[in-house]
Length: 339
Image (cartoon, rainbow, N blue to C red; front, side, top):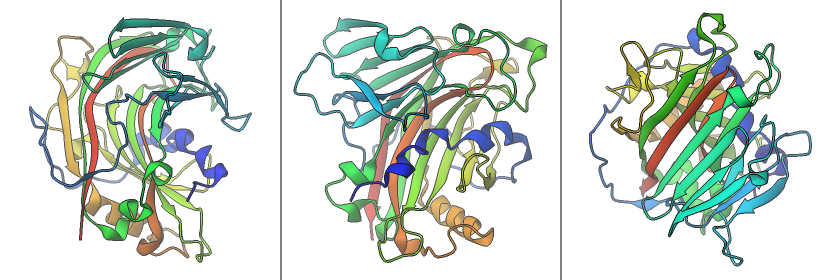
């Protein structure tokens, strides 16, 4: 079963409310803590090509054209079949128009004017860099488009059995990975408006009603983890309607799953010498809480938990402020066990 086309165009623009309104969210509970090394969980890996060896399809720089695929990064393999997608909304130029460098076997760098993607398929690593100072001619204002660099996968399309991503079938769902802030430069200082300007690194799952017999077929809500936000050392839970779509967002703050942060001396600190911060969280209980919260607020009125599937996975940057940033993600995984 394929994701309805209109839903695909929403995957990369779901965090508008969470970015601009992160200071007015709910209080947070729960958490697994930070671990120095990732735990190898048993179960089924839901991500296809978690080492990124399949390559990437690349979308255009705007949603105005329907978020069309405009190119791909295939490591020079003509027979490649990418299962990952890059979204680059708001970029001044497409990353596909930039420089391609093969650093070594399985290690590639794709460098555009204001975005850079570095992939090491041998190490299962991706670096996402967004240079807003090269994108914005002046300070962003209002709700005008801002710079994105996201990597996404449509699980309901790549899964060989849709029942593998049906929420009611799951017992646990561990989201894991290692993250290192390798670069951060603030070009705003005291001129930043916290309601408009930030740099956020986010994880999202689309929870979608894929029951064709349901009145809500195709409708979606978004479950997220706010990995990093330069405005606060530990991000807070956010739950509210998206500002630009009819969908509901439920995003856990990092205070729920990290005991270490990307800050040093009270400020974001990016360096290649930083330690990785490990994400290792069973998100399944939170998916149930998120759905119940959405229902209580009038969303997905004709949806039952049994109707929901994980239709998409996304990690990456949204940078509404003038910040230059790079995050290294390694050993990402979404592993399920079943009842």
